[in-house]
Image 1 (cartoon, one colour):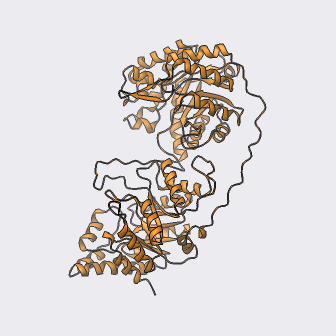
Image 2 (image 1 turned 60 degrees about the vertical axis):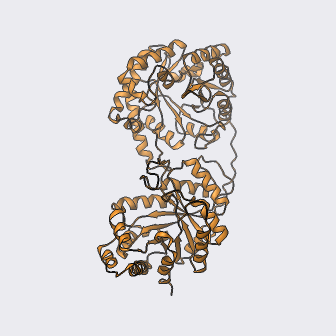
Image 3 (image 1 turned 120 degrees about the horizontal axis):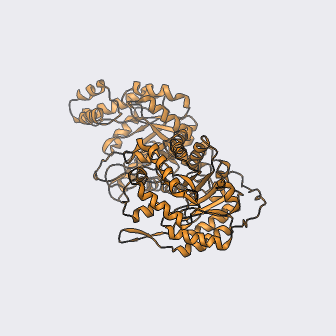
Length: 610
């Protein structure tokens, strides 16, 4: 057989269809690791490959889409990466014989990588390299890197393959009906970028049917002269008695295959829901249409980009931001969202705090139990009490696109100050069986907001006027692994954090220990304070709350109180003394008192005023 790219330049090649769909049709449960069948039921995989060869497929993709260490680890198969990939390639090779090319299929890792997630690009590249090495050992002719939503991740996969060999690479993004990737990157951006990163063939696959994919291919063709590929689903799935059924017929798919070719696509195939019959019809349609390249050969003209919008200076983002930028000592008090939908009491507390000279009210996100959302309360407090808020925003239970929408809405309603937290993964509160979702952590979300402040969404598209968020993060002086805490803090500053609030500190040495490690970051640090109400609360904080340091001497002082009133007064005194001791290092304080005791918080602050 001719080299793959040479053959592709001479005629349109047809890739195979879905593997998962066919395995499911053969009775393999959907919760199985399909990739593991390469070593556990090779005959089943071989039979499917052979069906596609008989249908006329020119390219067989190995059954290794999810065979990277990260995904296999979820099935307890992390140590079988090499075996599964090598066998996947060998099975496809035996089925292909000399009638089809074998493409090593590589899919996403299933986790977010930087700048959105915790995994570094170099770590992601190492996982892809491990998989690609095994596929090479098995004897593939090319690689298909497909169904990616994130350009950074697909770039890591391309780099991994390129570090090993010069074999052809087909790189394919997965898209929504609007043609943009699932993260919102338009084809006008990802098509040239895939070509720049070293892909020989660029295209789109999965998620949608052929009609919208054709529109995307047309947009790609207008900005690149690279070879194109298209592998749509057999339409959108329909749930019929608990099963996902794809309803696009082979004839319908074949009609669009001809249109793909007319737009210059050189590699046509199918994704979810497609079968050997779909491929047979696609092959016949392409033969009838011929495979001449119909796109113009001249390169596209330069794309004129609007100049980037001016960024909002930090001091102009909010009154709180202006105070910190001017070096003024700032005071923040936390107000917990109420249970239910009535906010009158909290709004009244916010008015009191404003009258008493507090700069900002912090609204915590994701508290235990069914409470009003932090965003809603932040807007109500600003509108009704006339005091600025810091909206604490948690990554928990929100996906990345949903977060972006929330934040744009918050900005439209006047919220400017943010305190970004990852959120608590533990099952706590009134619903211990509730699940949690994490798409990104606080570092990733800080990167998202920094991009919004530059006028771009996560897909790199302009949003018009840039946002003016004043971005804060949390840092924990009592972390058991302070080295790791400092590293994460540095990542947050690099991502765009402009100030930080610490978790509660109960003696100056705890704060100083952290401050000496992070003062070089040169962003304002607000010391977190918590006036104990009782001995019980102090003992609970010391013994049951992770990564909070309450010194023995503080516990002893609380135990020395004669009654409840004396204990509360002692708690206020300890918090006030701590604040006075760290004032030379901290540029403000954040006071949180249990049970909404704003008088206790104000008593702490009264001790700080001249």
